[in-house]
Amino acid sequence: MSTVSRDAVMAVLSQYQDPYLNSNLFAAGCLRELTVDEQGVKAHFSLPYPAGLQTTGVAQMLEMMLSAQLEVAAQIRIDWQVSAGRTQVQVLGMQGIKNIIAVASGKGGVGKSTTAANLALALARDGAKVGLLDADIYGPSQGILFGIAEGTKPAVKDEKYFVPLTAHGIELMSMAFLVDDKTPMVWRGPMVSGALLQLITQTAWSELDYLVVDMPPGTGDIQLTLAQKVPVAGSVIVTTPQDLALLDAKKGIEMFSKVHIPVLGVVENMAVHICSNCGHSEHLFGEGGGERLAQQYGVELLASLPLSILIREQADGGKPTVLAEPECQISMIYQDLARHATARLAALNAQAPAMPTIEVSDD
Ligand SMILES: Nc1ncnc2c1ncn2[C@@H]1O[C@H](COP(=O)(O)OP(=O)(O)OP(=O)(O)O)[C@@H](O)[C@H]1O
Image (cartoon, rainbow, N blue to C red; front, side):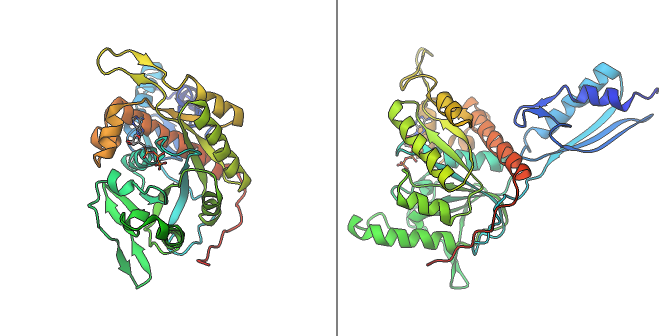
């Protein structure tokens, strides 16, 4: 077999643009090994974001491109590896976590918790080790979203740490596991802030690639303190496209920039309604709001999700869409969201100088 040149092989492989890194695999620094000899081509690439579901397919496609264009036999291996966040996580119980991602919204009820749950599940489907911290003190709903039986309490380790529950491969801790639904509102204020701090400083998480934090909605003192107490590597802002929600989402973006937490991007939820009878699509809350918001702040529009009865029924029934119907079109959007957000985070981790360590105590 005649040997093709290394340049020719690289030229063919460069035709593939990774949709999440927005560049070819060489320019994105993913090449680990490339051998071109009379045996053929052997290459190994490593992606910086979880991509377990797509590596085999992409490798096969690259092999076919080489075979078709250069008539050369190729063995391509693609794997992925997550780098640790810029901020070293020094919080007790959180030291084994590589990256903390906050999911926030300026306004309540826009689908932040549903997005956080599906994001966590999508990351896990792609092979990442994931935890989910439900810090939504006003309406902790991750227990319901993950089908946890009411009254389930986390185990306690060394008389000091809560052990997260595990559901569908995700480590899970929620305010709801500590505060009773029947706790009167008047008691809730001070108790809840105390419990939230306990949740942050006294949960023994495993070694995780990502901890997704479902933040309380809004941009008040509690959210700001939380953003400062938890060493967040990046945030995802969830909004619906109507003007009022967008206005609040802007406040969310500004809050994160105030505490120097990068915004990985915006998720536009309930963007378009598709009639389940006739298939007609309608932008109930206006069109293009998420895109405009992302452009205004120079961040990515990570995903745009439809207003779908499936999303609501599955989430409220304890099986978010990514779990209930992993192959459906909506799950693909969540999968895409997870990859866009983590690829962006990887780029930030690679670029930025290390941030100072954040130490958190429970006082
Ligand atoms: N894209 C969607 N289509 C249809 N229903 C949705 C969608 N996203 C979320 N929902 C539903 O909207 C309701 C509110 O969602 P969710 O609890 O995730 O919002 P939230 O922003 O976290 O609210 P809160 O401010 O109360 O924490 C839920 O019943 C959920 O199932």
